[in-house]
Image (tube, rainbow over all chains, first blue to last red; front, side, top):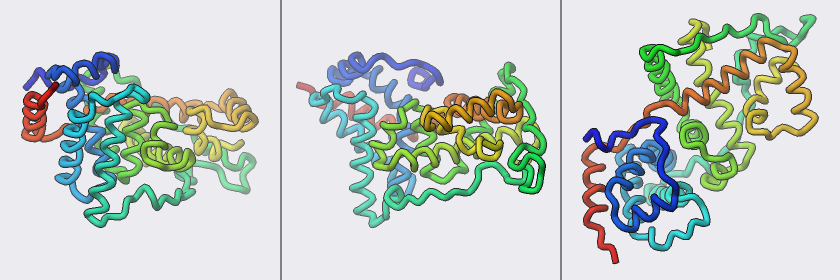
Amino acid sequence: MLLYRRLVGVVLPTDDVLVAGLRTGDEETFACLLNGWSGSMLRLARSFVSTSASAEEVVQDTWLAVFEGIDRFESRSSLRTWVYRILVNIARKRATREQRTVPWTSLAPDSEPTVDPQRFRGADDQYPGGWRTFPDRWPTTESEVLAHEVRSTVAAAIEGLPIRQQVVLTLRDIDGHAAEDVCALLEISMANQRVLLHRARAAVRGRLDHYFTGADA
Amino acid sequence: MTCAELVELVTAYLDGALAPETEQRFVEHLALCDGCEIYVEQIRRTAAEVGRVEPENLPEETRDRLLDAFRSFPRG
C-alpha cells in the first residue's frame, strides 16, 4: 500500500486539519497519522509493557480510544501530545495488569562518563581532562548510498539502546517534542530526561563515529 | 572547564539548560578548542541523523484492522 507509506520529513497538516479529518472520518488523515506516529507509539508502549505483541495492542487500543474521544479533544495540548497521553494511560494500566513494574518509576541516573576516559589526558598531565587526540571529523553524506548506510547505522544503534533511552531519544529527536512535554508525559524529572537523552545521543554518536572513522566508541 | 567535563554538558547546552555562568564557560571553551567544537558538532549531527531514521511501523494486519475500524466507526 504505497499510498500509506510514511515519507520521512513529510510535514503533517496542522492540528485543526487533522482533528477535523479524524472527526469526519477522513481516511487519508488517519492513514497519515498512523504512518507518522506508530513507530514512536510502539516504542513508547514497549517501555511499559512486557512484549511487542502487548505493545501493538496498546497502540491499537489507543487509536480506538482516540476515535471515541476525538469529539471531546479541546486543543489544550497538541493532538500528538493528547494521543500519546492516552497511550501512556492505557500502557500503564496494562503494565499493572501484567504485574510489570513500570521502569520509569525507578530511575536512578548513573554518572558514568559517556566518552571513554582514555580519550582524555590524565590528572598528571599538563592539560588534565583535555583531548589526547581530537575526534576525527566526519565526512558529509551527500551520496544517497552513504546516506542510506548512515540511516541503517543509526537505526541499529537506536535498537541497541536501553528502552528508556530509546523512548526519550525518539520523543525528542524523531518526534521533536520539547523536553518539558517528555517529562510530563513520562512523569520523570528534567534531570532524568536529560541524562537519558544525553546517554542515548552519545551512544549513537559513538556508533556513527565508528562507522565514519573506524574509531572505537 | 575541561574537555572531559564539556562533553558531558553538551545535551544541557543544546537545550539551553545550563546555568548562565556554566554556559559562559562552555561557550568560551568551545571557541578555543577544536576537539570540543568537533564533538559538539557531531552530537548535533547525530540528533539530526536520528530524526531521519525510517520509523518502524505496525504490522500490515494491525494497520488494516485499524483502518477498517476507522472507516466503520459510528460518527454522529
